[in-house]
Image (cartoon, rainbow, N blue to C red):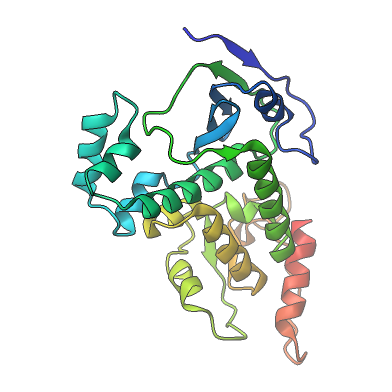
Length: 268
């Protein structure tokens, strides 16, 4: 069994998503950093792959996007998985152009790293010597991964401050759109049914989970979708998912702004 190193739980760092990851980069470690919401794979202190149950994997992104047929992916896994050369096999066999694979892999890596580096009080563990069967495509410096993770968090918070949108089932509202909804967001909105989460929608579309979060938070800011909140105990109305019911304003010239302010206050 591979040796492990554990990081102590505590208040999540705001300046750096994972101080432990920084230490591993400094010592040029190779292995798997396992956190609450995903795993980062390192080689010589650089991130070479990342996985998270909150995101579609590179296989979904390649096959749903049309870059690769499903049987081609599974053939590559069968032929080259044991040797940890799946990525190299896909390129050498002509199934996926090298540039397309690199772009898709980087997208999947940053996507999964965003969730894997989410704040948590659960201790992280590092297993030295562990490698992923996909192999190395393009290593990414740890500082670049952490910087991008922080940038994405700040972007989401600027769009809409309610993080529950990212994990809870989402439901359409009865509000009419105040402006035309872009086509990309319409595709996302069509899948909002009161049961699917952002991850479900991303997998269905074969898209980046983070970019799906961006679309959903924009739809929430526009008053078109809302997180399905657990029914509050006590006197709160279960039919409103614990939301505070305020009278609708019908004559104000910017009803959408009032709705967004109301929902933001409830979220906080």
